[in-house]
Image (cartoon, rainbow, N blue to C red; front, side):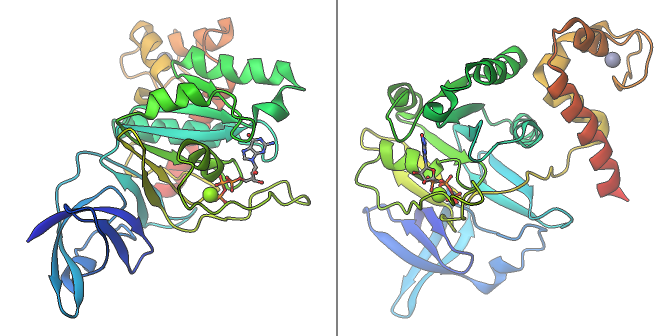
Length: 305
Ligand SMILES: Nc1nc2c(ncn2[C@@H]2O[C@H](COP(=O)(O)OP(=O)(O)OP(=O)(O)O)[C@@H](O)[C@H]2O)c(=O)[nH]1
Ligand SMILES: [Mg+2]
Ligand SMILES: [Zn+2]
């Protein structure tokens, strides 16, 4: 039996990269499909899998333990979750200020999940060419996330601005791109891996939204080593298995202030002597981040009922 790496998954078929460099189409052994988990996909892009080739075709027989993975709820109210990809060195959220607007709550849910699942995260702010007309919004966006402790990489995939930094960041590593439909994930990959056969559509003029051009996750090898993973655009980022009392631990800037809260079990909502709300009032924590925190606490309560 040999070990391959899953580079594409369509839900029923998986393309794996074999040790001798072939792209092999495989299916799942039935037992693996029913392993009792509440994930919609037992096998994800990035997984190292054992496979068997027979005259009837190739099958995946086992998935090796994952070094890490990124997961979200499959849809808003779903109890099922979806493993976006596994064995990652970094996850990048591709965000845009306009066309489409990426809302900060979405970004914060992504960041919380990355913290909870111990995946280094950063933000790629794409379509800088469009943002140049509104420098104040650009500066505000960067300030919110840099104050929180994250790096923001402003780029324009179509103009080529800022791509050298992204090349350095991704070289030799396995990097996941996620974000709303139309944010430019596939365009960025095409710019970084020119010979990749990536599908990109013009953004809808009418909706200023993407059209879900990418329908399956796919991993592309980088010329100098490393891989980059394109994923389908998503609308929301539902949290999986995060306790309400833990949520603040996944806001790094809250963790810097919370040791000074008067109560050791402070929830940073209504307590007197809360160092987190004091930091929000002083402007040391961005109000948008605090609002996301409160919404996450609320939503989590609903999810539990
Ligand atoms: N102005 C501008 N347009 C861009 C930029 N990057 C991408 N676009 C356009 O945005 C549209 C959507 O790009 P895609 O790369 O398909 O977006 P995506 O994030 O892969 O979308 P899904 O596959 O649906 O998730 C296309 O029309 C791109 O040409 C940019 O830096 N500036
Ligand atoms: Mg795409
Ligand atoms: Zn507090």
